[in-house]
Amino acid sequence: MGRLNRLPTSLRQVPALVLAAGAVTLFSGFDWGLHGPQSTISAEGPVAQSQLNLFYVTLFVTAGIFVCVGGALAYTQFKFRARKGDENREPPAQTHGHPLIEVGLIVVSTLLLVIIAIPTVRGIWYMNDTPDRENALVVKVTGYQWWFNFEYPDLGVVAANEMVIPTGRPVHIELRTGDVIHSFWVPKLAGKVDLMPNRANHMWLQADQANYYWAQCAEYCGESHAKMKFRVISLDEPEFTAWVEHQKSDARTIDPAAAAAAASRPRAEFAAQSDATDIGFAGSESPFAYWQEKQAEPTPGSEDVDLITSGGEVFKQRQCIICHSIRGSAPGGNVGPDLTHFGSRTTLAGAALENTPENLHRWLIDPHEVKPGNIMWRDAYIESPSYNTKYAETLTAEDIDALVAYLSSLK
Image 1 (spheres, rainbow, N blue to C red):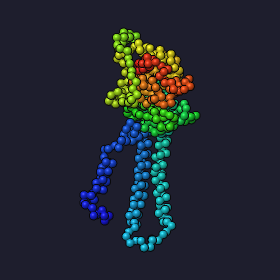
Image 2 (cartoon, helix red, strand yellow):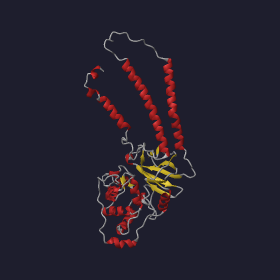
Image 3 (tube, one colour):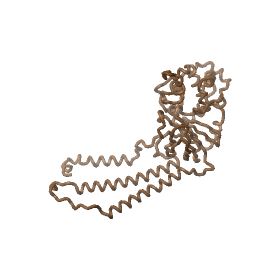
Image 4 (cartoon, one colour):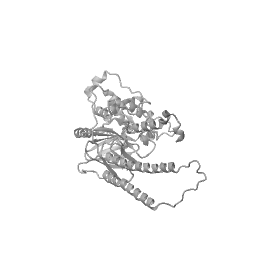
């Protein structure tokens, strides 16, 4: 302290200024980057809010412990620090301990644990028990390497990688896995719950407002775990009802009358873009607005009908139909996502990319580059002893252009 007092006044003020600046920054409007699309600090549903409240209780209790213990340690170190001339002084009397202090610390620690335990147990029960079960929407979620399938058993709807829910209504989610352990996590709406082999799990969530939410698998599940993402879109009840009715319909077909208008336009071409951005929302003001734009059908005469028709034939004749199904077209498989309304989705490849023609072209040329180890790529190599054949060699450039046009038309 003596050395500090010998410093110039301007320098002695530096520590105080640093502390003041830190306090202002900490308690000002600066959000520390904690309000991003997957922030648990920005709760927008009752389950997420319950878990956020529990986090704050735990944070404040542990912060109080830190301040008390750290303060006591700092006080002791300062008060009993070695001073000049103490080298030959006798050490203070040594005692085993103070029973009252030791018992008091045990009692206080127990009380603090109880303070944390009560809201923790209450939060577990709250997340486990879906309120208003008879009115709740039921969604059966199945995780695969590396995408999510969403089935609405009471509505007869099947979707993939984008789960649409009604605003202000509880959603009861039944969690299953088709292979390894996955974890279902929508940070702004609810915490993580695992999808376990041979075990049925469930949870519930609810969105307080119409919005577009990022979500992902939160349990390491293989080579492309980091790219196993999905989206949750919350709609007001009338919009949700309209979405359900549209999803029940078969795949969109192109009116042959539009072919004449399309014939005069150049053939559609899509260049591969290996550096295409993952999610940019095509210049829309928000991801939710972008999703709404994707639901609209293309304007009449804006599509290459011949190319789309050719793409439908390629889909049937090539191996696409072995894994994917498109209602209203030829029967297909269920190994991969249902593509009946693929063109209305904002993402593709397990929400790893924005659903644009450029990114779809990139995905079809080399899915392994986008999502390493995925089944679509693996199946294309299964007959190749060298495993050096490019996936795209199973499809011609004309096939891929036609498939891009066809899949993008499936609104």
